[in-house]
Length: 80
Image 1 (tube, rainbow, N blue to C red):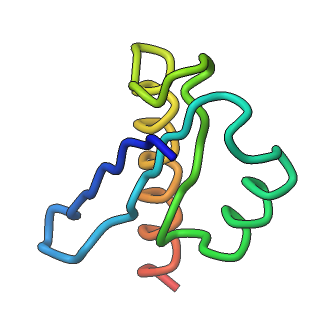
Image 2: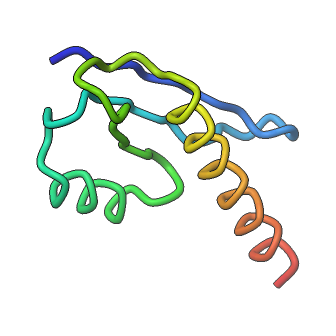
């Protein structure tokens, strides 16, 4: 199963989420949704939008948006 895995780290040195990119149709959408819910904030599974696992502009922007959303959540939880 071809895939791309991207690791990340927050500015303070804490480990960030892992992003796993799969080709379209490798996993059913309901399985991807289930994995994203189960591992929310730790692992994000997404499709590249095409039949290969390679990230393109759209999937890279999607990953950055996910990271921005998580960063906002981290900020809100830290201030509580």
